[in-house]
Length: 491
Image (cartoon, rainbow, N blue to C red):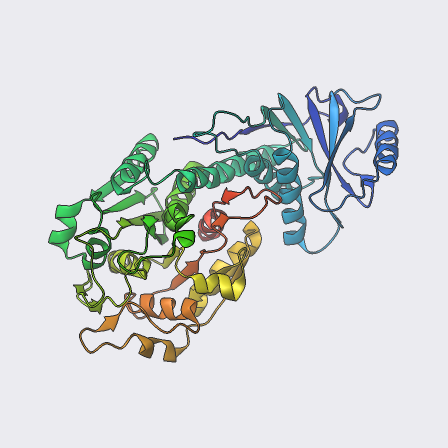
């Protein structure tokens, strides 16, 4: 399993001297940027942009012949909107560069070589361009007979070790996000708990990281009632995978838990057929947390990170759990199943119990948990709930990473919607505020005093609409960059 993704190299050559099939330049307000010292070429390109009506609208692209003095075969202008390098809004500048680089690379299928010369004057800006280019160059072609990714990509920037290091970091961050996309895009015929666990083991072995995999027998013996209950309707049994990155000298411990439902039919509470079409993406949370951990390891960040991946296939088989069944969870709490399509919180609850038992400094779970998230925040903004400090740290890191996340509350009255006459809780709560209710359920499996945040990525994890910026159609890799940024700030 490997999507077609092109890593980039770093160059300090002058943009006009770059020998590539395509030179990518940014433009704002019909003015070409980052061509200082090449007045004639810049004037010619400004005139060409004006002649074709290219205004520099954010995300727009135009390919034109190279003017005299430019070594590349052709030039692609990419719009950066109202880009202003001098603005105090650093986050907006970085995101404009990411999106510009991504939009350009998305438009260059099969091009032999690309030189990317966007206006990047700081290490953070070089990293942003590199991330955007890596994400925009992504293509998932494993199951297609046609299609090509861009060839060699070179990011042009200033001289200096800090800039080269920023490029290396950007390459690792983009690669981690693209690996998460690969996992989510893989059909459930081929990605199921056992095969998923094997992929994780292989990728962990490449990094010499410790992996523990619990199968059916171990899960039953360990009392993981949520994971077992969700997975028992499938002939392909559940797994709980634990991955550990523990560098010497690490003073902080981050624990990430990701929902890993490799396909969600809804179980006996069957989803409508239309609602199942994208349900291979119901393991996007687990893909995000494990690939973020691998990215953190690749960057060598000095923080301990543990990833927990509860994996199951939610199917309506003859042995599937039924509404009114009562599960005994890993924590010892009992849960009455009132809706088998509210399964993600069950597998997360078991994994959260184990993660919390290790007393991490920060516990974060990521999940495609509720349709209510999409109703409340749309398809591009994730909801973040949890303890105040943890929630604020996630939101701050998301802002730096360029991912849209919004802080949401967990109203105390939400928990009463899970009252049961047969068990400690039901698994399905009130419909109004369903995203907040799901978080209230999860909080029951996190220790009091634990710094914990829950990120609902139901909408942002899978783009069913047209591509935009560095975001392709289908899997997006949502939350990977935010989790890596948290580790960077913790280290």
